[in-house]
Length: 93
Image (cartoon, rainbow, N blue to C red; front, side, top):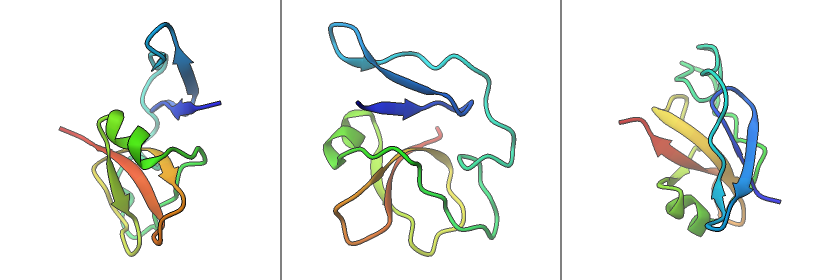
């Protein structure tokens, strides 16, 4: 079953006739949450796994986290099967 982690730490599933993710219910996480820039801390990959195709369809990009300590956006899933510790990043606008 495919899930998406919301900014409040909860997860939502795909639903409806178009199989889109349900809307996230809560408030943003505290400033020390993984989706906020954490200076000098290694990037913690999300627990849920998505494919490259699902990442792009969600408006994200495949992002190599190796050596990175900060990012500007939300990591919505880790992408396995690549030669890097990659995640799907949806950048803040």
